[in-house]
Amino acid sequence: MIELATISDILFGFALYYPLFMAYLWMSGALIYYFRWERKEQASPPQLETPPPISILVPCHNEAENALETIEQLLLQNYPSFEIIAINDASTDKTGEILNQLASIHKQVRVIHFRKNLGKAAALNMGAMASNNEFLICIDGDALLDEDAASWMMKHFINGPRVGAVTGNPRIRTRSSLLGKIQVGEFSAIVGLIKRAQRVYGRIFTVSGVVAGFRKSALHRVGYWSTDMITDDIDISWKLQLDHWDIRFEPRAMCWILMPETYSGLLRQRIRWAQGGIEVFLKYFKDLGVWKSRRMWMVYIEFITSIFWSFSIVATMALWVAGYFIDLPEEIRVHSLLPSWGGVLLGITCLIQFAISLSIESRYEKNIWKYYFWMIWFPIAYWLINVIAVVLGIPRALSRKKGAPATWVSPDRGLRDE
Image (cartoon, rainbow, N blue to C red; front, side, top):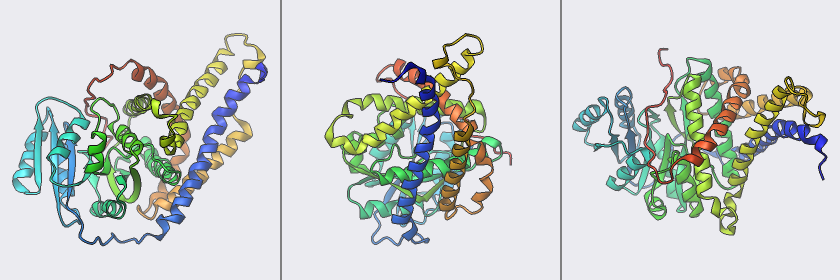
């Protein structure tokens, strides 16, 4: 039986050592992935024998500032046969006019217009239904897809009949502020590292919502995208993997994206991500104990443990603050938030993690090492935001009306003056 006197130590210890443990787990998994698959890959795009035609789906909502650039970049794909289907989801700006003009100039471009805002999932479903091909690549209306991304993604579908989806490698375009520079490190040192590690132990938590490829027959089996899920990318990832489809990560399928560069915009985004993850977890909770879903257990455990970690941070900070105003019993008093030698170990671990991930990612993006210094601020800037996002996201997920359509609003897309 645990003595009451150890409660504060348990909270503080878990808050400190959970990220430490996960960092080494992710580093180990990423290195295994790198040496098993990634290091052996050729640098030039794969030469595919009889590559099948593909459909590129671009859901758009108020993308007048970005749609032209996004579509023109897609037209540069080094792939023999593809069509582009842009879905205008009831935009209130000039998105529809811009897309119609592009369609009148380029025969590869088709446009579908919604009169009512139905959300990204509904737009993707309509695009999939209207597409002529078995393989789909989905990108956001403000993203720039690398010219060889389609070829790298299609390599997995052609060589793997059980591959239901391939997630690409998002890269940050907005780098004019501290938050933007930190996010460059986050997507390379954290997101990329996690996807590599999850690929090693069997299942990926989510494809990237901004760039992912899909096999249409796999989507058909699971009912396509759910229109009532806040994060359609997490939901479709779990649906496919619970139906025993494989999801691959392709680091060479790069896509340049816009991200928030204000704390308010970033917090809104992370609350949405947290809420969506919790909604998906609750939706598929019944599958937790099913043996045939055992390959998803690591994803379940990692997700729910991260939630407990967020609340351990909140509890630790609450006890520390309360100790200044209330005479707390010694067994639950937190005397300091400074983790002494453990904090030094955690800091060194973060630097090692960043160094490993940047060493891998430098194969795809030159000069990425210049962001190493800015990544030092990641734990301070992002851990707190993610903790707040989880705490606020849970009640939103629990209170949201079941089956309500998940429509969208225009997000914060960063500062692009430079």
